[in-house]
Image 1 (cartoon, protein in one colour):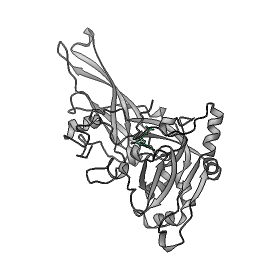
Image 2 (spheres, rainbow, N blue to C red):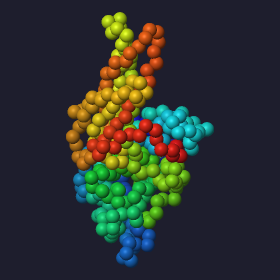
Image 3 (cartoon, rainbow, N blue to C red):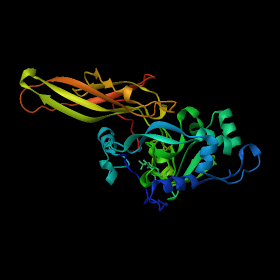
Image 4 (cartoon, helix red, strand yellow):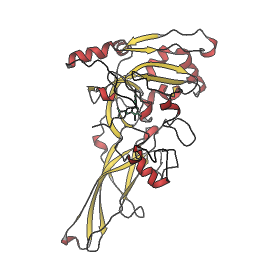
Length: 338
Ligand code: MTE
């Protein structure tokens, strides 16, 4: 039950009928690592290299991490309501509510291991100078491409993967079978599906999905997602024993976005944000795996009591999350393009 967001039809990738053949097809899938044009620090230009997934797995091993995947356009309609017209206004996307996010366990090879082996000079220079110079370009079989800063993708603790599995099963064709980039905490648009090739360049890739869409108000590529909490269920009940009080049961999820900080608390209000009470985090259901940080979401629940008179009552419920660094979600998002 994960949203699907494609800019073009799902490419015609071989999908053998039985699972064993599919698994073996995945093993044989080749990834092209393109030579760097204008090599780093005057060294020789590296050559194109291809590696099968099987070779990548044997050499670098696999790991499993939990992360949300969220489209940068999630909650477009709420954003428009809060901050006014955006780049989505007047398009079908202005109706997007909050379903373009999901949470899953992803299995793959760590890019922090793969990239230094394939691009040693650029990775060493990035580690030495703290980054900023190189960008990793991911390209899919549908011709889609997007890039993210090398320094971010190289960071071991950020758990960026070349992923083959979602929740223990091979990726489905919709989600990028046989291979996708899975960059925890980074906008969905950079998590390229049907991954065929990887290259490095000194500037973000000049492709419409990277250079026109999914940019912020400063016209920069959106990379790190923001701290979020969402209300996914709310139920009110009132009984005669309650003497003018109604119970409101609220539940949802919270996640920290690009920082990967754990969620410290979620607060809920039943009066539009005047009074807040703390929700219960269901942190014990978060599964321990190879994750270095907390890029997955945590579910929360809260039971509120509100004063009610007779008749129908409208209750204005809202929530806000705070992470372990003490950052609290802002009441309104900053004005962006969408
Ligand atoms: N990768 C390719 N090759 N083609 C695409 O159209 N869409 C991107 C990204 N990767 C896309 C892609 C966008 S905008 C998002 S939000 C995520 O994939 C969605 O991933 P999902 O469909 O698996 O949820």
